[in-house]
Length: 118
Ligand code: 5GP
Ligand code: ZN
Image (cartoon, rainbow, N blue to C red; front, side, top):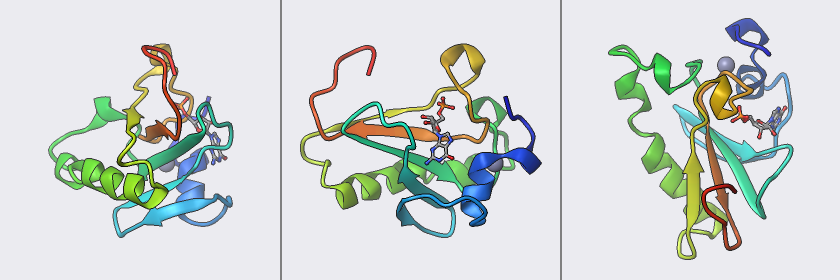
């Protein structure tokens, strides 16, 4: 389990040390395909700055992160899944299944999704 910013896989994707199949990016956010997809379309959406998860949002980064849903909307459009629908999931903490401690939304779509488990 990697918790420090220095060892963070997603920071390495942001700075280009680790390759990823990118979908869209802007100055604040980046989206790329998940390495092990659990749905027909499975993309990760992350803030470029390192924040470990929602539990670590505070007055310094909450404004910064507020745009992630607007960015997600653009990602869905880019992927062509806006009309049919998609699911955003923020696993927050180990017991919720978070394995990479750099805040991210899973965007799942491209097919009929079961509920509650993808
Ligand atoms: P979590 O379990 O923390 O909510 O989600 C982490 C996700 O990151 C997993 O779905 C996993 O497949 C994905 N992942 C882990 N390492 C890499 C990587 O190096 N590249 C990409 N594209 N996805 C990764
Ligand atoms: Zn990071």
